[in-house]
Length: 235
Image 1 (spheres, rainbow, N blue to C red):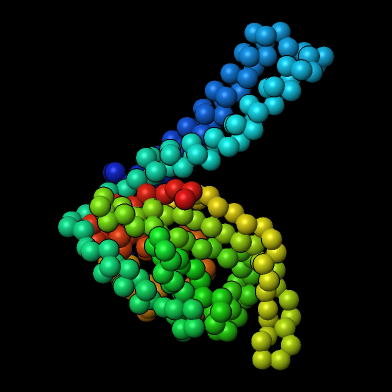
Image 2 (cartoon, rainbow, N blue to C red; image 1 turned 90 degrees about the vertical axis):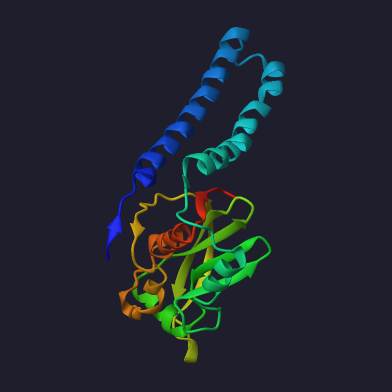
């Protein structure tokens, strides 16, 4: 498979800058709180003042994901190539990769604001392979489309699962164990000359590792090849 590392796609640097920006954001907040405590001469006995300062750490916790979403959408922005395809054509192509009851390795479902993609854990063949690979979290990718700017926003989600021996036809079963994650994971992006979606059609089932990159990267390349910009965000 031929790949081309495009300078504007240097994802390692972009993800590093995102990490630094979050680190600086938290550091500035910590410095402001420290300066406030020192400037006001607050100590542990000033209960009334401390009570009014409680919302500040809460404000930090609320503003951090907002800042992360804002920074990610600007730093992790990758420009598409060529003339953009119509949104509906893009959606129909991705929906054709598989549905919830199909033999495809993926399930692709249309949502109000875009598409939801994940590994096909509802099909017995793929569920068996997920167990064999000791997959303990199910990765889901939400793609939200903005046709005005021809930009697709990637929102990553992950839920942990636990396996148990099933009886009868069902075989091994799994259940969601409660851990739920929404965030941004590091992704190395290269531009391919081949059709990235062929990886989901032509490969043998046992060749899949069911990693997040295995699902996410071909989708990024497909959209870039079809003229759509790609960015990451929290929502």
